Length: 410
Image (tube, rainbow, N blue to C red; front, side, top):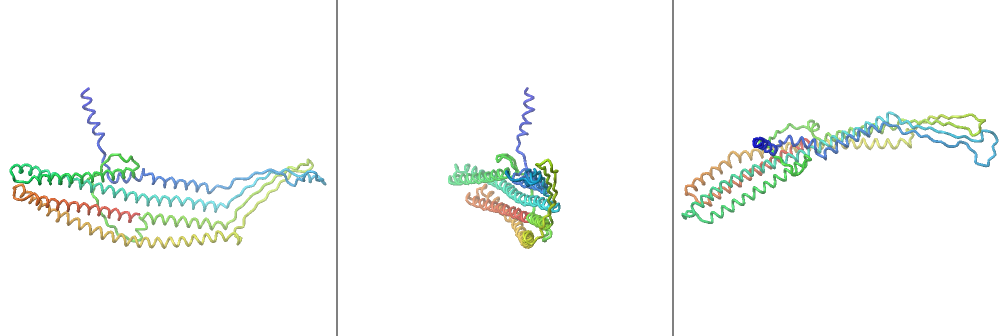
């Protein structure tokens, strides 16, 4: 029995390990599971059914009643004056070209919904990246703070050893205790930021807010500046694609409205049963056609067509202005990101290493009792502040990259 327990326990521990989710996995789950995105898919399918329904004809009409029947008490001069019972069948036949054009217009609305889904998905992915990057930076801050705590703990031990020999002041021990507790409070703050990012990412993935997972700490955030022209932007920006689909849908609506000038048809069949046996059964067949080109009828669809044509022209102008504005904005964002990368590189390769060497030198002197504790604390605080500034700049850089990608594929 014991050997069975020893075999099962490692499996339970392994099964309870917190999963690590790469960014691509989170983005794929958002695409697949997010409730808001599913609404666009449902609407798109509903338009497909509506397009199928648009090709249906009006239902036939059947009626029954009397025809040319005299009122009670009237004198009948001949057998035909007795009247007749009449059955009527009537069917309206809409012009097939109208039905096809209307169906194509309604079906095009599904493409508009799909394009809107792409725009929303890009926004949700940008939110996910922003929280993922904030989580990564928070973990980097925690590592820095934990390293700081180890340094402060070492200095506290040195002070406690020196104090009985009057080589240090008791106030120095208390000062280090305060710094250690401040450091731990900052760690708690970062852990709160991580919990908030986890909850938000879970919500985007349609998972319980308290579901546990970790981010991939080996993920490298890169920036790839793209060659930007209005032609390429028109193909990748979701809002431009949506506008193109809207223009296409409006053109199909214009085509459907132009089909209104074509006539519709109606068939009417009447069957009469005479109330006098001397009279024969009779029937009547009538075909009717509408005349939509009549001036008082054509005014409606002609004005609607002109209004939609003007709306299309306005949307085309808006699209051109949007592409030019986005092109300039993206080039400006590229320059800003590249400048920020150079600043961060200088801080990582020159400024912080120099401060670290300065702290190491002061700390060695402090261990050899050649430097006072306040000097070491000042050097440590300066390094710690610069490290936090570096992480703040990195977070700003990552957010700039997120904004850049959002504008590029919006």
